[in-house]
Image 1 (cartoon, rainbow, N blue to C red):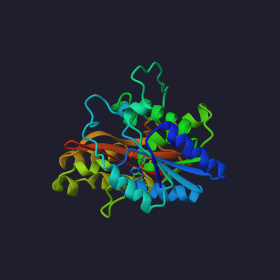
Image 2 (image 1 turned 90 degrees about the horizontal axis):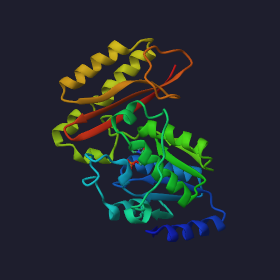
Image 3 (image 1 turned 30 degrees about the vertical axis):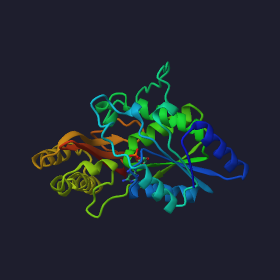
Image 4 (image 1 turned 180 degrees about the horizontal axis):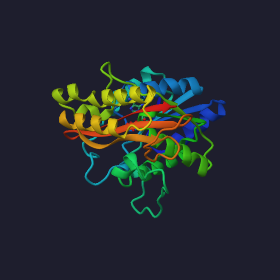
Length: 282
Ligand code: AMP
């Protein structure tokens, strides 16, 4: 497995892979790899001949009061996991390799970030698009795999590919969960033992609401409010928990047959932010 730290090196490696006629499947990550990332790598193997992973904690997607400094960094561990999964190439640049301190341009998002995490974390998706745009230009993958766990990110990247004419196929990998339902996340490492036992409450609340909707509830507002109160009683602080249109990412109070929705939540347990979602097709 090659590990490249600079853009010029990784471009040379990619050129060689392309000369060999390899279809490149790309998995962008911020490292601290867990089974969710491994699932993305496995999906990538199904999509291409060779898998390229990037590991970069992207400063542009962290707000000033967020956890950029404390975000887990475990490169040697991550590289071993990539070797074990037959990854051909890891791109792990330093901040200075990717960003010019004298940056003069940014990407704006018109409507897809008005709700969900976009409403709570100003600048977050602009930072995500900036790095994904750069990585697509550096790696020039044929296909890229992202997780359903970050569904709003997936939808916004899908739109970027369309509007910016990236020649990349996008594949969604399902959410990988612990046995008790908690969606795996690098940030779960922040949870205390007690919080870890409470954390699956978000998954269970979403699952309960999903079941009621599939059983016929078409106006789930009260049901959702009740689940929010129950979560708050257990010690969660709620950023949002609601139904959203998969297409517009706007909240929906009245559900309609034939439409696709995201039932999504973002909550805090102490200093740990957890997100989770279900896709619901009526
Ligand atoms: P991150 O390293 O957290 O930025 O995530 C990198 C990629 O892994 C993103 O496409 C995430 O959606 C995906 N991912 C993170 N956690 C999970 C999970 N539990 N299941 C599936 N994909 C995940």
